[in-house]
Structure formats: C-alpha cells, structure tokens
Length: 135
Image (cartoon, rainbow, N blue to C red; front, side):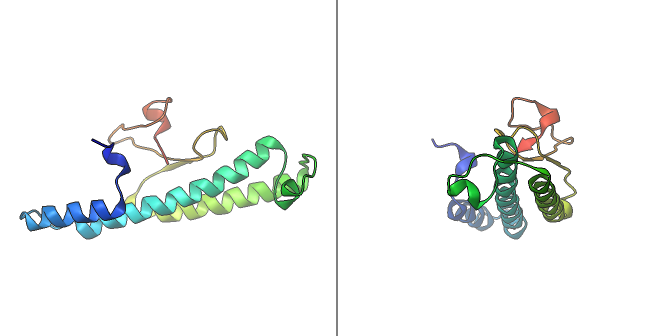
C-alpha cells in the first residue's frame, strides 16, 4: 500500500464522499479547506527556501543564471530579509484561522516552514516534537 500521506487530492475528496455516503458526519468542506491551507503553506515554504539557499550560497536573483560570481552584500541581505519577512507574514496569515504557530527559517537544507504541534506532539523531522511538522 502506498504511503497514505501522499494521496492525490481527488483521492482524498472521493474518500470523504465515501465516508459521507456511509452515514458519517460531513466534514468534507472543513478537511478540504485544511488541505488547501497546507498547499498554500507549502508554496510559501518553497519561496522561503529559495531566499534561504541564496543567502547561504552568496547569490541571489537572475545574476546567478547569467554566470555572475557569487556576491552578497548589504543590499542583497536587506532584500532577503524583506522577502523573508513578507513571506513569513503571509504564512502567519494563512495559518491564523487554525491557531497554529509557525517556525520560520533554519538550515537552508531543510524545511523553512514548520507547524508547531504542542497539542499532538507530532513531528516529521529529526529534531523531534520541538521541531514541529516540516512542510
């Protein structure tokens, strides 16, 4: 059996319909909203990762694609900080309806956005429960 955490969106929707038809309480809208929220957070994590990797590697933007040597100065750092802050604010706004705290940043080789899970204690990182759920 495939890992149930990697199912297709259509498969999840069909399973919810199946449960509803079996007489269960209709939680479809609530669950699908949570899935859409996670997808938005995953997209923001990818954008945060681009900034973090650029900070680590010393290059940023289209100059790198043109083969320019790595460069990182005050202007690039200020731009990266501003982008990170803007993306973090968006992520906080997306997660706000669920009352979930986020951890932003960290090692650029890992997730740049993690859901903190003090109630369930669930985690999917080597850092354990204090690291939360990486997106």
